Length: 608
Picture 1 (cartoon, rainbow, N blue to C red):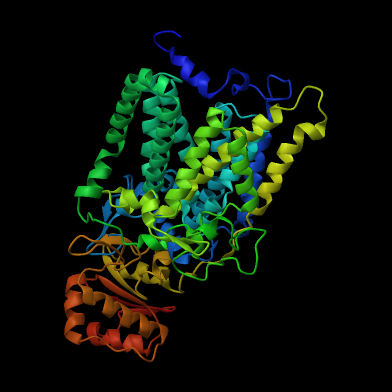
Picture 2 (picture 1 turned 135 degrees about the vertical axis):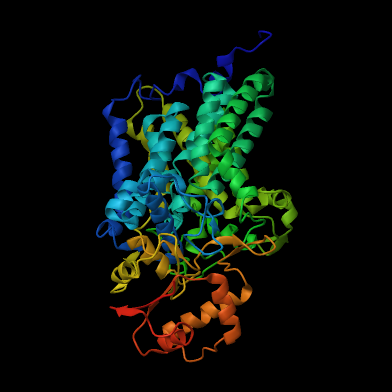
């Protein structure tokens, strides 16, 4: 063996020459017809439309049901970015468009900045819900196409790669995320990031060029979903560690080039994201910790084999999203793969363990699935196993890493599982001897298809978005407020009452909302949801909302506290969705006097 391994020898060790991306394994042909990949991409797009067709029936005013608060929040963020672009500037990273006068740090929220900016013309033309429907559709099809391309680059045959792409792009992890978590459902970039990392460590391409490409992908993902970027980074670490252990004789020769590539990547990320990250961690309204209870966001062993109600094949006992948190909350029910696919994956990993691609992806898949279980004690077959046996138990206390919600590792885990399936299927099909019958050649493919049938998703359940109240836009036209004038809207937007954020998203009015559904810091800096400044402000908001809903058991907060809260909030106007003479109108009139005007269902007070 030469003293120094040639640069391309590492790549060859991972992708045998017999299955280079330009070739099709096992059928004797050296190239697939050029139209077949386009046919596969069209099938992905048709599949995405099939899952989202109920939205496309009326894309401007239909949204997914089951996570309406998050859907309204994303609509608000999409409108916020489009409004900034319409005024000729990028969206501010700290803004009082929500939670005035304190504001919101957008980098700590699911602000979805990159897609919102890119699609801002569509938002301004057709509305935010149309933009979000386009994002969902492209998320399904684009995620599948992304992994399909990556699998082809690493030697998978055309149809095995197509099946692997479909498994990832339409996996339960992405299908359930699509109920309201657009940033997770749009999982196009993670496969490309993993591809770039593998190219760097295996010597495919010039290190600096590959590093710059990786940095560009990381920067883009940070402005789509930071948590997915972190999940993918963990997956890359696992993959590289497995590669280093299994290819120790090749790693030494790659250290220098990998360092150069990572340095180029880091420089590009800092150049494009450095300011945004500084604002997030050191700017105004920076926070610490997580507002979520991590134990509510972990996979359970039963989750891997119990289908959610979003799958075509499910049972009466399937989780249907009745819970708002915990293991039955569908947008977080991400680990399902089903017994048939699990059996196929394990059998494939054992049978083709000697193939480095299958081995590396199988190790990555298993580790990511273990990470998704979290770090608490687990019970299996009547025996309680300590959380210390799980890898996340030892990682959750690390700075930054501990803020990751473990169940979301299922998204990159499904990508790794899809790669195992594709590479193993390619090897199984190519193992058929020359002259073998069609049945002999294609039975592995048939087994793989049957294993994937339980993962076919149902079309998304949808319902109408909250309609804009009659008189809403006319009221703001008559108020003549400055663009950044804070407005107190009743009902007050917070948590499970996000209609005003939806109305603002659909109309662009008002420019600054008091309250909202967001993540922000308490006075001590701890991350919480829907924080409004002084703690008593929330009590006043709750009382206003009870009056708005007609609750008879509402107890008014002390008047002195309400006046102090109003002095803190300093609203330029109050807009109430109520009728003249209502209990809500009488209560507000005690503080602001008679309404300035009424129009439709809107009572309005101009205060300055």
